[in-house]
Length: 397
Ligand SMILES: Cc1cc2nc3c(=O)[nH]c(=O)nc-3n(C[C@H](O)[C@H](O)[C@H](O)COP(=O)(O)OP(=O)(O)OC[C@H]3O[C@@H](n4cnc5c(N)ncnc54)[C@H](O)[C@@H]3O)c2cc1C
Image (spheres, rainbow, N blue to C red):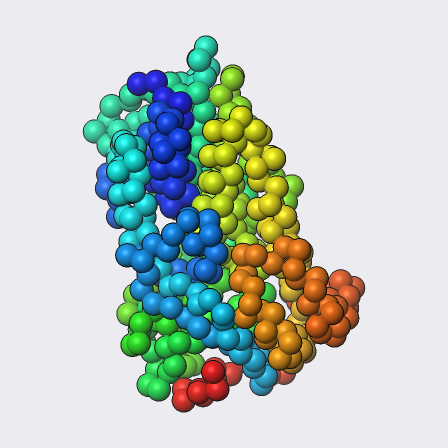
């Protein structure tokens, strides 16, 4: 088999890239190690920027819409009304939809085909695969897109480094009685995590409570304790390691004349402020497609995504230094002007705009400056109060 582009991994980023390449007339195929497209259930909250990167809203995968995000630290909280609602998406439905679109565009998806290694070839690169039946077919391709997730075998074979990772775990729960299903809540508690907890409704009756942690088993224990504290029964768990953007990593390389372009978690294309990787992963796939169809470099096409991810990287560096008292001050600074700003621009379109927040709320700039010179929260003594969950009858949105 001779291809223009081999895509490794039937992830959202890989399937999107394959469809777009086929529509541009490229001979492209996807190779996926699983024998069928049945990724584990994962409830995702995704900004409306998804429509911008995909070109459409994947309605078949949308479970629910969220119009308000509320944040709490200690005893203080603030709410932001979103101009365009966040989408609550089921990952497997999104993957199925993207796979269907890729196949309709003429892309063969070879399930049960695991990428193993590369060999040089005069017309590009030879990929050695292993099928679920134990066969070892080879494929020659002029270019490779690696959408094979955090442990990317392609990156390893190409000698490219893996991005750092953090664990995310979320429990599927029934919403507490009286809970407003239009609102996602986020709680900061640096005593337990330097990221945050959340409750994301996925319907009028159900949602997920989750946590980005620092270490796998401890994260699960913290989440279980959180559920017990708030009287929530887990119906099931969703969890995995997620990549963290590292601005020093270059997600591309080459084997002979074949460019090897990493996209999605394999490339660390994840906003580290919120640890969301779906929109930015597809954005990275879009950049890879452009590079391969326009004859430009991936580095050039990645410019706008890297600018966005760099900003989130800087925000994360500052937040990692905050303790609970500083998080309380941060939430207190969410004035009506800040609420309007955060409601207007989504979390995937902050580059070039976030700085205007300083004009609307100069106290945020001051707080940012203080954090720059503050010790990391992991070094600070534990604060006195623990973030309470809001009243179950919360109706202020
Ligand atoms: C619990 C949880 C909640 C999350 N919530 C959100 C959220 O709310 N919003 C958000 O934006 N992001 C969220 N994320 C992050 C998001 O899910 C990931 O960033 C995104 O799924 C990464 O997708 P990907 O396209 O890079 O690869 P993946 O989804 O990891 O897919 C990689 C694919 O490659 C295949 N593969 C691997 N190795 C090989 C090989 N050698 N050969 C062939 N195939 C291979 C795998 O089988 C898999 O199908 C969450 C993550 C977790 C764990």
